[in-house]
Image 1 (cartoon, rainbow, N blue to C red):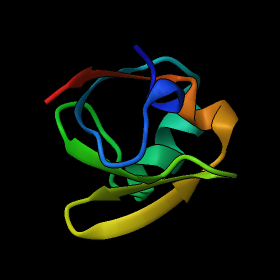
Image 2: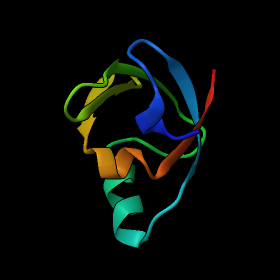
Image 3: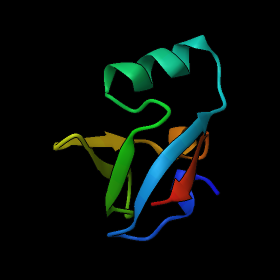
Length: 71
């Protein structure tokens, strides 16, 4: 399952990121790395997620490349 498929309020653990070095670097700088737990704040427009008490907005293209499992 990918991050873009989730509904508001769901908690997940990031399993893998399928993308190039640039995408991985952008997500790393925002705190989205394998093993982190994230909660979906909003699924309308850009994805808004909370990771380590930080709220992060990412585009749908990025969200489709983040594989997750329910937590």
